[in-house]
Image (spheres, rainbow, N blue to C red):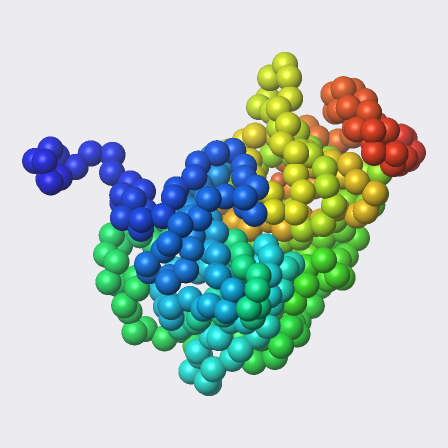
Length: 360
Ligand SMILES: [Fe+2]
């Protein structure tokens, strides 16, 4: 029974719990994570808010953590996975593993993962500027499954297999060649996504490149893709929960459900995030004079897809929808898409490369 005597019915324990955190819970298709209102967050001894994208799916949430100049968070440890992208500022994180304490220094554009149930603490390295981090976690899955906060935040089980090579906290990693679009980089910490080397992936369109990350041997997924100047990727669809965050460049994404007459549009720059909902077609466009990179985080990665839809996405993400895959080839796309893109580029004084690419 609930407190007022009513039977429990269609309960979402995660959403009930999140109300008790005492910080804003924002909900929208997408956000500017730099601008979201954050408030004092007792549990973290910092500022924060939850950023619930409409396409976050059943397993994943996102929160923004802000650490004031010269401050640090309280020490944390929890039985859910967490992938952190540094939005702004610089600082360090100390992680305790069975081998000892590891500290690494991050700045805008860094990416790292917190190994499952390892104790950690974040420090703002600046005495003058705030630091903002965007974390994607699988807490909704864990909390909805166990419904017991003590089990999640006060659990002494150690997972040494998640700590990885100590070199992983120095920014080193291991390249695991698979095939285009599926090459993996295994590490715990990527110092700068803006300069990280990517691998060409012809099939997803227009000279693009990417890398799949395996972070702290986790189930949580992250990958990064780049679109060269004057190009856009092919449209595609998949299940919910991919949180797409801009790393470099500016541009927009179009999104629509099959059969819709019109597209909707989300404009992005660094700090933007959005999450396409289940089955929503979406397509990313670089409208700027520099290569555009985005980071995507989700539940279920290349190593451990975990859910059937992720497995299908990783296999079929560059296969034509007409052949049972998830991608719309350039030759089949709505002609308005190219016209809109070229109009946008004209405004920015950037030449389009798409006609030569589409006719090649
Ligand atoms: Fe996508």
